[in-house]
Image (cartoon, rainbow, N blue to C red; front, top):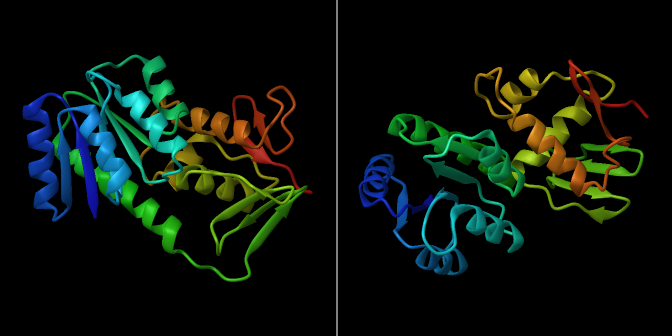
Length: 229
């Protein structure tokens, strides 16, 4: 597995590289954003770990670039900033996870492995003849493909898993806690707004009316659901 690490704090980048190499990952390590972008364009990447505050194009800009180029590999943001607005911004532009400095390297390794598991399942899972159709929305498990009125919707692996879980439980209200723990495979925190941000992004891709969404309904104070047909 190839992991890109971008951080202009040499000590942090070197530490991350060391721990990842101990897990037998191949590392592309950079201290400058321009070099990282060139690597993204020329090398197969499985996970990108991006420092937010870096000279040149910052981590947010690089994450946006990755998604605009159509790359679906997981992106983990590293930052010394802890404001919710920054976390929401990163998740909204397509980041999969967000870790605040200082961090435990073992936690970072766990996050990387979790992201890789999801990405691998997204690319390799093959469940034949298993299609969910809901009012013009078609979710094909075998191809990990989502179509809206026969037009493909470009979802990240995380977004696909969220939509699939809701569709598999259509008619049921799914709490943010359940959705997070089933999709992320991690313990949910009360202050966690990750689910909300991903739901918002999925709705945008489905061209949902925010006040009257057709597919993903919000049940205030409870969770989310997709109605039965």
